[in-house]
Structure formats: structure tokens, C-alpha cells
Length: 258
Image (tube, rainbow, N blue to C red; front, side):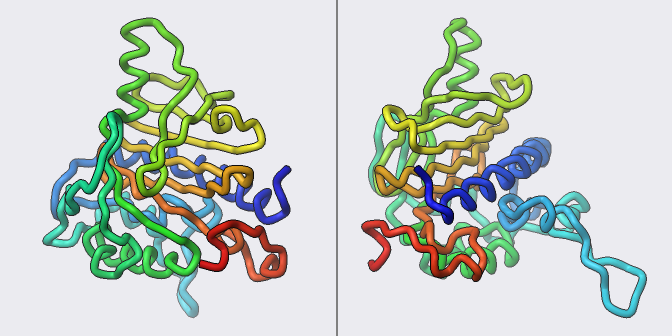
């Protein structure tokens, strides 16, 4: 069974995933390319109560718009030298390509981030993750569902990238909404491990997911970067998404003291 920290992570990430699906839809309608407005990852993963609200300015009647609102207005621009495919492939499988660069290094973060806000968010997040890695996905969920639509075969399992060459088999148990070959939200568990939790949302080539499996010592979050790209993170379950009041309630993993 999940411990108290993992239950909080599950609840927090499920809420974040609901927000993510909406932002993924927003992203699917924007034009790609340097200089275009983008939704920063900070807006993609924060709970809706933070990401979708505006903050009052002391001593005035105006508000400072949230990151999501700024993105809608086109106020957040890519770095002038932003590259859609910045890192070379280190190794690959039939469905996935992993880059080797250390995604916690600030020089690499500069290449991953679309803009300064996203850069700052990643740097701040470093203390709560063990690993960050850019992954290119050769077979996206959208491609799998499109093929299934053509053949009439149901989709019961998806392959999700983990870190450093790991591929995770996601058994789909439940879908949210009507879904289609272009977008969907799903939950379930890892194949052969009903005690794990997997949540996933996708729109076209963009996908976000969480995988929590204490039994397998797997705590992974995947967030979209560009179409067919995922920034995969091995998270610290003791700190990721938890407040200071939970600091004494630890989950021991093989990575905890590394």
C-alpha cells in the first residue's frame, strides 16, 4: 500500500494532470518555432489553484496575471536561440531515444527551457529530483491510438519512457472523457503490478504522465517539451510535491541517500 507521502503525491499529481490536459490542448493550437508564445512548465504542473489564478498587487486594484494567462496573451517568448531538438541521441530502442546529457546541469537546463521562467522553475526543482533527461519518443500515444482507430483494435497498454533506457509498460484501466486518437486522459498501473499508479494525458504529439511504484522503486514524472519529446524526471518521493509539514514522513528508496 502507499504511504502518506505517496498518497499526497498521487493526489497532487492527479490534480496536476487534469490541469496538464487543458494546457496540452492549449499547446496543440499554438504555432511552433522560435519567438512564439509558449506555456511554461511551471504553468503545466502546478495545481490549478495556483496556476490559473491572478495575484493581487499590494496597494492597487490591478492583478499580476498567472503564467498561464501570460501564455494565453502571447507574453512569454522562446529564447532567441531556442532549439527544438537541442541534444543528440545517446541510445535508443524501437520506440524511444534517450539523450545522455545531465538535465540537472544549468547549462543543459538552458537548452531544455523555452524561456527564463521555465529555466528558473527547473533549477528550483533540482533539489526534489534525482535525474532529469530529455527523451525523444518515436511512437507517441497519439500514434498508437491512431493506428488502433484504423485497425479497430483496442489499446490496453502503452509504453512510457523512464530514465536511462528504462521503458515502463502502462496497463490502462480507466479513461476520462470521451477520448479520441488525438487526445485523452488515462489511469492505471504498471503491467503486473496493481499496487502501482500511472496517470497519463496526451494531445497530439505531446504527452504528460506520472508513474509511482514503491515496489519497483520507480517514481517518474514525464512532462512535454515539443511534439514527440518528453522531459523525464526521477523524482524524490520524500520532497516532490510535499509541504514542510511532511518532512518527517519519509519513503526509503534505493536512491534516497545518493
